[in-house]
Amino acid sequence: MPSLAPHIASVPASGIRRVFEIAARLEDVAMLVIGEPDVPVPHHVAEAARQAWSDDLTNYTPNGGIPALRQAIVEKLARENDVHVDVERVWVTVGATQALHQTMGLLLGAGDEVLVPDPGYTTFSMNARMLDAVPVTYTLSPRRAFRPDLAELERLVGPRTRAIIVNSPSNPLGTVWPREVLQEVLDFAARHDLWVISDEVYEYFTYGTPHVSIASLDVDDRVFSVFSLSKTYAMTGVRVGYLVTPPGLSDTMRTVQEAAISCVAEPDQHAALAAITGDHGPVSEAREHYRTNLRLATRLLDERGIGYLDPEGAFYLWIDVSHASQGDVAGWAEALLLEHRVAVAPGSAFGRAGEGWIRICLAAAPEVLTRGLGALPAPGDVTAPPPRASVVSSD
Ligand SMILES: Cc1ncc(COP(=O)(O)O)c(C=O)c1O
Image (tube, rainbow, N blue to C red):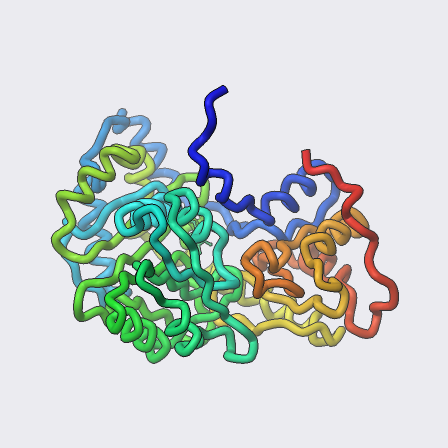
């Protein structure tokens, strides 16, 4: 067999998938590992998709998406994000995933560097590596309220740095960066003439600090904004997101979309149009559901003295298990799964700074949350190290 491109071996495997795959082989697992809504897709969204199939709307569409959907996104951006663009800056994508890959493909050549958050969503680094580019991590540490350290950013930026990725609300942390933090990052990017890639897929799920789109602060056209319908409308498997580019890139975007996907599936675009223009009651209900689960989870953790980061957005809880995990939270999470049938995401899957932490997904039934959190050892309970997970086969 001929060899693969050498840089493909450097694409890091997902530490979340590993737990998920082991969990899938077990029975009766409290699943808190995957970042996916547990509410159904709104009825009118499913109905629009069904109708599109019935009407045989199953053709290629313009590369950027059907005009009605692009227009609806333009109006949503103005209304909700204070971002004012024309339709030629809006590109409907196969989820945020393709929007991220497309953007990095536009901006990064082999050997170029992109600043990515640590802890941060795994795909940021994976995408950079797939392009033979280099993800350089900036730390979000408890000491700085999980916000970027400007002095560290200044140290990390070099002649090959091309872009910085920001993700607010954050996966896995649930932090929401206020306007002044976003402004500082934008000023930093301007000082070094960097692009900004802003991942805003959890924009609708905030619990305190309101979501601000960094593109609304952009005065010199350096922000690419990535949005998704996956989490907002509980349609992760439908695969629709969108990318908002700086001006003047529509010819380039048309070409790269053609090469990558041609277009998003037409029935899915009709579902997306119904989601964006339709009743947002189900989105508010989902937000309330996550917020209620958050209250339940933090109460359970408080009662047992287990530390966590109080999230302001998304639907995750970032929990400190360093008293138990002994410097190997990935192994510890596997042991927890085997011994207690509780699946959580090890923090180290999101970067080095995640060691000693786990991420749980709050989009779960209350009884699953209660059982899962009940299996976590409190600081006072820890006497012996947990069983080693090395007995687990990964195949
Ligand atoms: C921060 C972040 N960005 C992007 C994605 C991918 O979303 P999509 O389903 O739209 O591809 C996820 C999914 O978990 C995410 O957490």
